[in-house]
Image 1: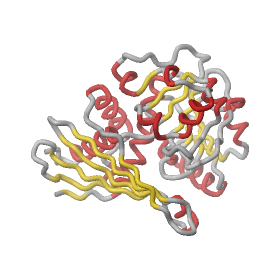
Image 2 (image 1 turned 90 degrees about the vertical axis):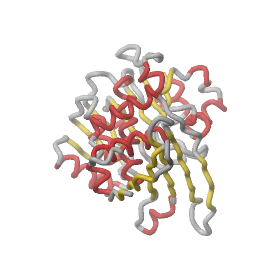
Image 3 (image 1 turned 180 degrees about the horizontal axis):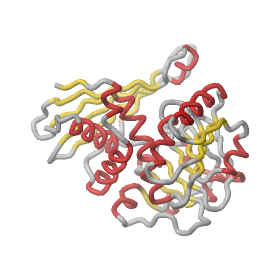
Length: 314
């Protein structure tokens, strides 16, 4: 069985190829039961979460990602998310590889956002606002630039030091990047606003949005987590990655409960967008919103791509 380090996994998942691998798996489909979520109460710190995310294709490969999310780790200088991915042969059950689950999560999450933007963001979108400065957020500029002509990147984070570190790295890789000191002003100036945080209260206000923008919410994965308010959701044409988002994220659960959104108003998901059965952006002035909570399908596509790219695609 092959073991891939974090560096191995990252290098085997270039965004152009990864976005197309996601597009193909959403077109073709595979089995992906709703993730298993278990709360882990911890004394003196925020509750932790254990996620188990399986997926398989009867004619090919399968896998399961084991994820631990510990928001309290920020206080001790550790990453909030830790995970591993086990890839297996669906036909025989033979275990093929263990990959770094954090890199798979970071890159496939950003790639899924970019995949959605390939249908929903304006074709001339050049200005990106990244809300958050963690590991997923650090991949967003590279991912979106694979599908849109991103030139200018603003970075906002509750920790301005982290935002500055990310902005400097992005400048070193060819973007014009800067810290956004004021979130409202940064939203108004962006073509794409992408949020990758663990916020439990809305950060983005609908009143700040302007016609033609694309709002991307990929951080919230629990009912008590939110990145945008009801007004933002009500003003936008809303898309999701899978139906799981309706059950898992406060960014959808709360607006549906308040009447700001209805399930019938969801314009489509990644399956429909990739298969052409759901229409993307309707016009240049429309505000679009993509809400993702992640799916094991994306993990499987990423792990399969990485394993095949290493010359071990058996």
